[in-house]
Image (cartoon, rainbow, N blue to C red):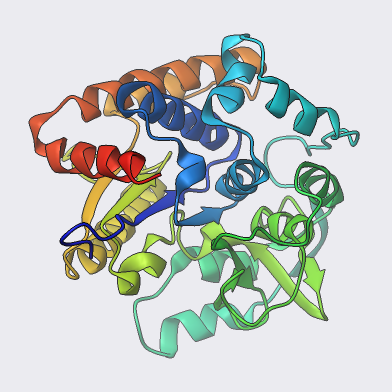
Length: 326
């Protein structure tokens, strides 16, 4: 923790969430930059899961929040950002929404038994992932595009990309654990949605979407005792008492427990989530550019409103302090 003029440390968490997750993160990061002057590229450590993993690598490659936002706003990118984006030559290949299975054989049915009988808090998505047949869409375009954005094997600053080992059901954290790979393969693994994409094989092990373990995986930052943790979560409603879908409710409870872990070490936290009305407005939206623009705007507006609340004065002060130390 920072005291007496020592460096202020900030962690950033970018959740899973598909196309809506990417738009949500961009809205949050753009609002943070505009409202406080803090640039997410300055994060001391970034945790990225699924959609959040590519945003994390984009930041580490040098793409600013404003440049990320330009996709949704139509504003021109900076010369620096445009140069990075111009290096991407691979087209993104996405499967149709919903399941896209190769066969009817479950990926790893033993995961259901492990989750039910081996103790600890069961992770229903892990069990479900084991029961789903493998998806038939391969995600190599994710890997290629990511490696074109960030040609170096791994960022210099701590960047943790989350996936799940399909054989054990355990979380794998590329960039932190002793798992050698490149950014492209890590993002492909982190984004391998069960039932849609084939698992990503790295060094003989099969990996699937890190959101299967947790859509945020923010508990990874608990032990670091950072001054501030910023969480951008596109599919939770921690503070809401309204009834929501089972997935939103479960993800929200999981994030609440992760937040408790982080706060237990005295770390300040600010969480950016969609409002109840934001989530309702997303229902039925097709994954189009116009829909993404709408989600970006909702996320940005909600983030501005949250940053203006008095309860986040300390978080804003920490952000400003970190900027003054550059």
